[in-house]
Length: 464
Image 1 (cartoon, rainbow, N blue to C red):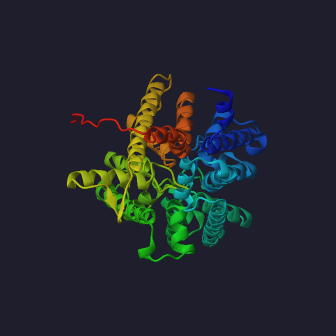
Image 2 (image 1 turned 180 degrees about the vertical axis):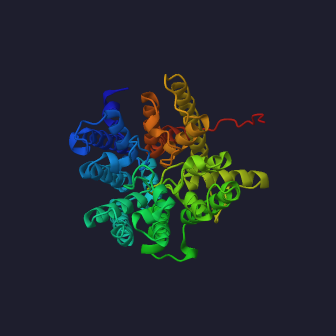
Image 3 (image 1 turned 135 degrees about the horizontal axis):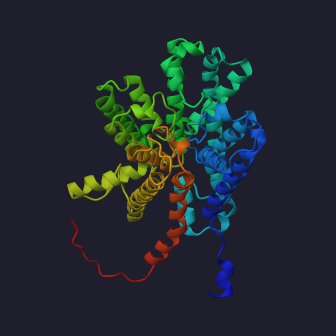
C-alpha cells in the first residue's frame, strides 16, 4: 500500500460509533466503582461495575447485584445507570447521526446509502431534522410515562415524595429505552405482583403500572422511523413505506404469537395467568421487566422466550435482537422459495444484499450464542461450588437474554463466575452494537467485488 493510499484510509464512522459506546461503558464502570456510588461506602468490584455499565449502555437490564440496583447503589450510582440507559437508547441514534454528519461530505456511496435507509435522507439537513425528531419523541414519551406512573408511586407507602418522583422517572426512562432496570428491589415487579397491598396499593394500581410499562416498551421498540411516519408526519396507511409496514405487521404478529404460545405452554398448566402471559410477550421485546419468577416457566415456555428474545425489536429503535425486519426477510425468502416466486412484498422486491445480510446476521448470531453457551457451561461445571440453578436450560435462557439485550433472568446472573460474566458482557455489547457495525465495516469489500467489470460463471451446488 502506498503512502497516498494510507493517507486516504480513515477511521470508519461506524467504528467510531462502536468506540464511542465502549468509551461510555468504561467511564460508567469507573464511576460505579467509586464509594460514592455504593450504599456501604466501599469501593465496588470493577467486574460488577463493568457488567452493570455494559448492561445499562446496551439497554439490557441484567444485573450482578444480588440486592438489585436499589439495594446496592446510592442515588448517585442510580443516576449514573440512568444516564447510561439514556445514552444507550437515544445515544446510539444521536451519536451515529452526529458522527455521520461529520463525515457527510467524504462518505462513500455505501455510507450514504445506509444513511438514506436509516433516516430517509442523505443530506446533513436531513440528519439534523431526524435527530431533532428523535429527541422530541424520546422526551415526550418519557415525560408522559413519568406522569402516568407518578400517581402510583406517590401512593406507595414505603416511598417518600422525592423517592416516588425518582422511581417514576427511572421507570419511565428504563421502560421506553427497553432497558429493564428498575428500583423495585432484586425481584423486579414480582414482589409487587404477589402482594401489592404490602406497598399500600390496590390491585388495580399494579395492573395499571404494568400496562403503561408495556405501552412504553412497545413504543420504544417499534423504530423511531415508524413513530415519525405515524405520529409526526401523520402518513396515511397507503403512504407507509415498506419498512413501516414490515415493522408494524411483524411486531403485531410476534406480540400475538408470544401471548398465544404462553397461554398454551404455561397458562393452561397454571404456571402463570393471562395478564402475565401478555406482559411476558411484550417484555421479551428486549425490555427485561418481569412480573413472575422466570424459573416458573415450563421448558416449552422458556424455548418460546428464547425465540422472542432472539428476534427482539425493530431497527433504529431502543431494542436489541436480530430485529423484526431480519426475521421478516428470512420468512419471506422461505415462503417465496416454497411458492417458487421472487423475493418481494408490498410492491417491493428485496435486494440480494438485504437477503445476504439477514441470513448472515442470523447464522452469525446463532454461532456466537452457541459458543457463549458452551463456554459458560464449561466454566460453571468446573467451578468448586456449583450453583444448583445453573442448569443448561437456565444458562441457555441467560445467553439469549444477554444477546437480545433483554434482561430477564432465571436468577443466575449474580452467581456466575468471572469468566462467565465476561462472556455475558461481550454478548451484550455485540448484541447491541456489533452486527450493524460489522456489516458496514465489511460492506465496502462486497461493493468492490460487485463493481468488477466481468461476471463469473454461475453454478448450482447440491444441497440437502
